[in-house]
Length: 463
Image 1 (spheres, rainbow, N blue to C red):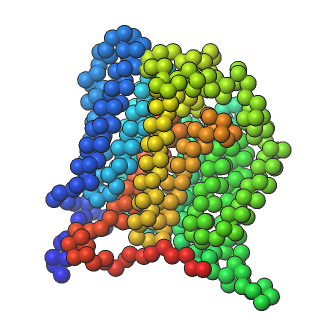
Image 2: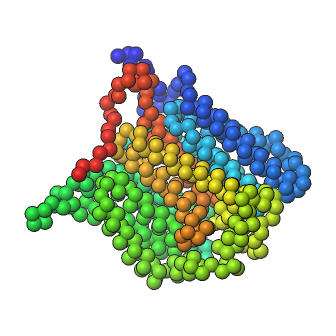
Image 3: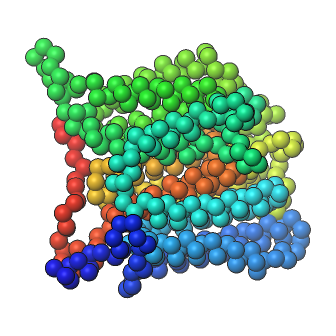
């Protein structure tokens, strides 16, 4: 039994600093190699951009390489210490996307590049802080109503006078002194935790028919009423803030979690109908929705979307080349490193570069779903699915909007677009995925004996 305990406990008791676990860590070796590869790609793209724009090598290439590698190594060492058996590709993929975005920002808006680098450092610090603070995912389940209260406070904070700082008609920003950020970026993560906790607790009630109508048993709708009321509240607040993108994102994540919990297609049909009614009402009541749908259906050559189409066409297969001027950016207020950063990548790196970004997101989503599959509790599994859905659908919505597959939402491309709030929130997101991955990995004792220790649960939908 003493041997079993020694093999099973890589960290000290709860509340103390985790112990550095000695021994081989094959996943971390793989991660280190991928991180170095991602850093070298970032530096190579930076050098190409500088040579293309100025005709000479950048003078500070050594310090730049040191900083990029340093950030990656710090996060890697934290993983070796805190999550030694977690997924090996999540962090390198995030670092690669972050690096590609940084190169594009340096190319088009150099003053913003320094701020983006600072936010990347803050993001890694928050990444490590989350790994230290969240030692067990079950702790998040215990404080779900406290997290819900925090999410509500974050959602309504942009509507508070003197705290919210509206930009045109959109009210997503708050300012505390010189610092401005979007609280909804962090609220969406807290909402995922709350949704996952509620659905994990009510799984059987939502899945098994228990209400009798005549001679038939049907699903009892009462457990769904509280969560629907809160969802309606969140949608109403976001509508007041005049933001369509995050409303779509939270709605989609809610539906995904409900379907994964129950496996009932009736909920999907109901959700589609609810979305159709909400979309019709938003088109009639919200000016931003009408404008975005009209732009989607009738994108003029002088509109932001029209410029993006010309940029994609200019890039072609191999790109116009990093360092060259984009084909269609005639106005200084063109948000090429925020809303339209994907179009900038298509111009500079062409179809190949844009496809590489899409593939990176596909791999990141696949890794998140693999983490969810290996999770050891219903709550952890649903949190992993929800976080992965947030990341994947946010990337899909903005890329589909830029290419006109969907109406343009204006949300940021995770890890790539300029924006401190989004970057830090996404590092927090992958930190929680890494914690779930660590808990879902087999221990040394389990691998040695082939026995799965108590505490594992299967996620089975009762029908």
